[in-house]
Amino acid sequence: MSQGTPHPAPHPPCDDRSSSYIPADKDTEFLQRDELRPIRIGLELLKPELIQKEERIESTIVVFGSARLHEPAVARQALRQAEEQADRTPQGHDLQLQVTIAKRQLELAKYYDIAREFARLVSSTCQVDGRCNYVVVTGGGPGIMEAANRGAADVNAKSIGLNITLPHEQHPNPYITPRLSFQFRYFAIRKMHFLIRAKALVAFPGGFGTLDELFETLTLLQTGKVDKVIVILVGRDFWERVINWQLLVEYGLIAQTDLDLFHYAETAQEAWDLIARYNGVPIT
Image (tube, rainbow, N blue to C red; front, side, top):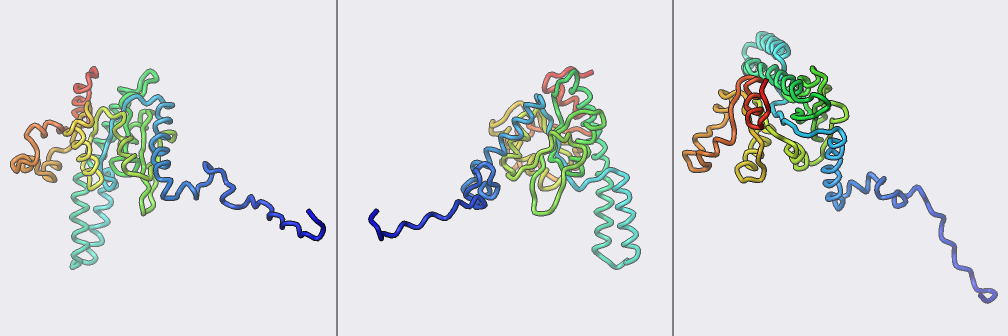
């Protein structure tokens, strides 16, 4: 370079605080971009699968039911509180409605105990000699889900919780096996994990979430997308009042044989006996 020719200005030093300098797999902000959705979906499918393999989970029983149903003692207390509030304001229509709801919730509280007994029965029967068969899996929340995880914990057995991130704050119930407590972002991937190892689906009384999972499974069975999964509806009176199955047949919207896709049970033992017979498990 000839004398008097200016030197080019040097580049500024590298700023290792810039987000561009973070390796892609460690850049959490980058991983949240819309374009990375396929990667997130793949990771969400793979992580629980690998962990369940490591924990030697061979098969599962899915237990669904309302997050709003409590054990009988709690339901009775809620009814007393509702009645006390209504007594202080006899003309309060909303308070009287709360009393009616609390009474009905108390009627359904028996299903908390049945779900807990069911999980205790299945877990103590099937998780023996180091094997993890028919492991109870729930949505990981309170209510019926808590009852099922709790029943497994009662007999020191493993159980799985598949929680989902929601707009309102929530936490997994404390009875899930810690190593098998998962949190999902995508409902679709969560639903896949419910059925990947499922030998049965047991549905207790519940609302939109329970109905969503139930009808998705029935649709998959009806269309042959899944097989070898038995569906048990616990509480025939509840289910036949909520869903008019025969009306769907009479309107030609489903076939009469589609009603064979599910069975009713009233007790924990009855539900397990149906599952055991369906899957060829010796009943002791």
